[in-house]
View 1: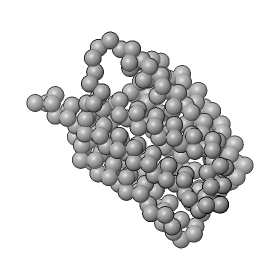
View 2: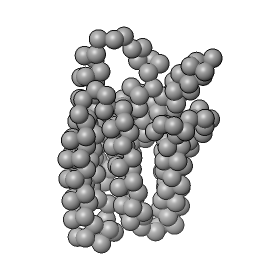
View 3: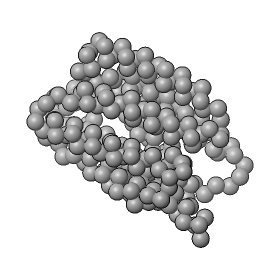
Length: 216
């Protein structure tokens, strides 16, 4: 079995969330700690099931709606001041819900809901692109190196850009693994997860600095 690098990245991100977001209770930042805790618990359970050769697709199918709803919630809270994100978010979530229900009923939730995940991923990419466009158009100066929301969106953009590409070339990557035993998809997702959780961890530090500087 492949080494669980993803679980390590998630655990480190959870530690950062607990350390740097502990005192934030009045905004969406406080909810990230609970989401990360839930994510780590699901990943540990999924890895344990895989090690025992027990199918775990149903577990990730249960996790998928929670994951997407929370990430769209984050994007709504971050992007709402830049453009009317609500209409995009509702449209893609509706498409996600329809595909999720169709795939789940068709497979009995025993196979991972790939198409609903892909649809939600395209929605996240679209909203991220709009955010970058309107963020760059804004006239006021913002130091992106210290701007926590920017790193949340950047993490989502790169993760779902790479993930969508992997889904598009899934058969090609599976063929490489079958013939040459090179887990290209696993390697790509490992890198994407480190980028994703690294950016999120850094955003927590930025948010903490912003909070402490405003209190001093």
